[in-house]
Image 1 (cartoon, one colour):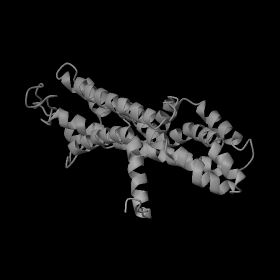
Image 2: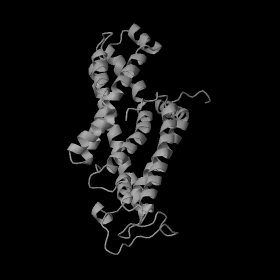
Image 3: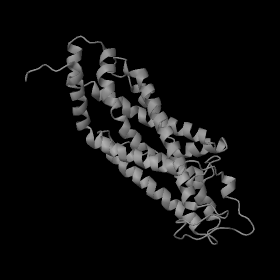
Image 4: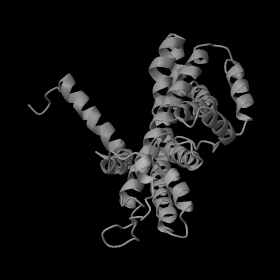
Length: 293
């Protein structure tokens, strides 16, 4: 009775529980990260406000200084500035998250073109190409391309993803190279497994396991870039903290809170995401990415 053999489903359940227990700290940090993102999007729900509704000032402005009811004050049209800043940061996060996910995916696909080559110098062409493009200042490229497109958010996302891909591809290639030097991989070669089976079944899993940490660390930097570009007028037809700050600077005498408080909101949110992203990145043991933006 006491030595009853466990079924396969019980063994899988025990293995899954053991794996979850090993990842408890990562899951806790990721939950905090997702809760913060969910909080941002909860404030942007059912807000049908266009920039023209915010940046129009009537002859008798309806703005109010910050008080107990309106923490950040109101705009010239009477709209709550805290709610608008909340919406603006949700926009920044969505742009950054999409660009980071696309960039990581493109980098993985780019490395996959070379990883199955058994040659020792298989990544030389990839590293040389990425290094050549990396000489260009990333922000200058963004400003030129985004400005030439009329400041459309879709172009900003595509260019950000392209820059992330080019700077991340050599890092991922190095992870694949390190993963192929592990003892389990050498043992798999000794057992006669093909390179395709080894890369797919063993090395790729180790590399992909690091991607959540890279994503979490990239998003705050991309949020800051999106805020800077929208400050320069390249935020598209959406409410962003950068455009709110730029608009508030024109009213710095009449309504100084309109330039100050959106910047405070952006700083606090980016700082919170940066701290959580750094912790998640360390928890999954992914190396720090060089700040190229």
